[in-house]
Amino acid sequence: HGRIETRHCEQLIIDKNWLGKDYRWDGLQSVIKVTAKVEEKLSGKKSEETRWYISSLALTAQQALDAIRSHWQVESMHWMLDV
Image (cartoon, rainbow, N blue to C red; front, side, top):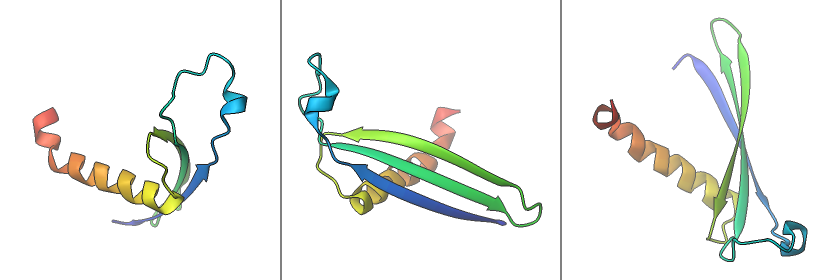
């Protein structure tokens, strides 16, 4: 692909006390942070992007990363339908 991609995934521990009294996500189990770094081999250009995900499943960081990658792999198969 002409680029080097790395992803770092963190699963945050949910402490419902810091969510406040107006907390309305009773099923919230996981907050996931994924940081992706990309380096273009030819130009040397580097970029970094952070994405956040929430889930009602109690996931480890690896399980979350696998689920996210799997989801986008399916989505990329249907790009013609979305255009």
